[in-house]
Length: 111
Length: 121
Image 1 (cartoon, rainbow over the protein chains, first blue to last red):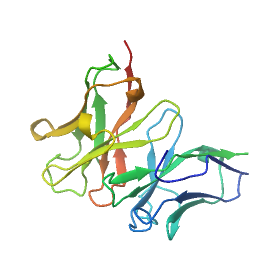
Image 2 (cartoon, rainbow over the protein chains, first blue to last red; image 1 turned 90 degrees about the vertical axis):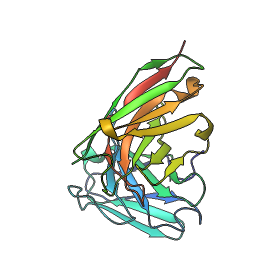
Image 3 (cartoon, helix red, strand yellow; image 1 turned 135 degrees about the horizontal axis):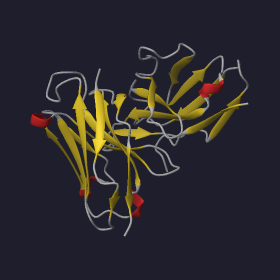
Image 4 (spheres, each protein chain N blue to C red; image 1 turned 45 degrees about the horizontal axis):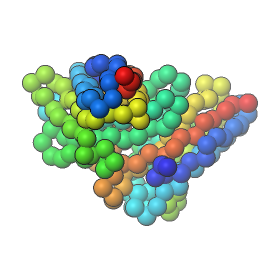
């Protein structure tokens, strides 16, 4: 069981927007602004999409945006494209001895 | 631009030790950059699991569920860091990624391509 809870799957049509939630606790998301989001295509290494809740690495489309409220972080993907079909993972620093926790992952299907 | 490459056996017998090495290029592993060094694994068909994050001179963080079997070390002379996981079982079968997490946030900007390690007799 993952420390951060994500929906197993989400879907959307091309051009629409979708939101993936990531629910933690006061020990992780509620304490730190150190939430990251990763995209992973089958057979590939994860790719960093969002770090420090809101920031995008260079080269990442502004269609990807992050936010946080309380113990829950969210990834919004706007203008869905077929290449956005992938697995998405959130992670956070944690005050516990675990140091870092990941979510269980969300599979995005673009209909 | 950092590049990371994992190397090591793809098959390990149960109860033996899994050993992997990550070779870093693009910067010195001992430089005062914002990155530390770490490992993440992913069992087939499952999600990501953080294993460890270490820095050259400041800290070592290990996943508590693996800590008793785990050692991560840095060899600055070879610009490499290594993972050693003892007493492996089939549950340790996974793709193992080496990574360069940010030292404060642990956001992983750089990943190796991953290497599949299968634990089987």
